[in-house]
Length: 240
Image (cartoon, rainbow, N blue to C red; front, side, top):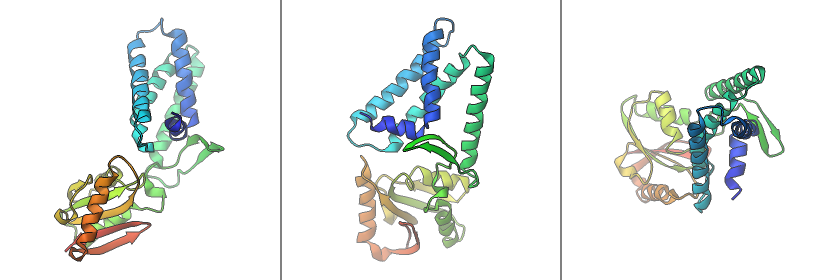
């Protein structure tokens, strides 16, 4: 029951979670004065639903709870605007805006790389959430693929299921770098039908067997592929 609670406190940050908890208190005090009751309650119920759903599911991963963050942020916004003290309200809004902007900048600027923790709990985190700051450099191996292909159009099969390398964040970098990829997919793709296959860590999830299937197909047909890049547990193969 507590797995995703600690994920929310750690990933959402204790500071943001504190704002959310405060918003519930403010709403409980002032909810009769304003006409935003339905929206706040909808956000709250939606967040609880997502939390409860993935708590019941036996297979767990930190990424699964992320849809709840949207509802937590929306409810927090309502609560902040309900604060009657003008100075306190403006201070909270400015703080949230500054932290939000800095977190977005952190996604593309390695210099924004700071956080504050109390033990294992993240109070606030201004580090990039994408693996641009980790040992896995997605932009690097996408660039290697593009150069290997001579800048022409190509397709990509993703055989990796981990928080750092998956079929969610690789397309993000592909779009950001405007690479000429006409088709990219994971979920059990057949490497024999794609120009390149990215093989990375496969953690145990409800769909990990699909990525294992792709990896097995590649291994069984190793003679049809050339290794064009490997680093930090990620390998890129080109179909011959």
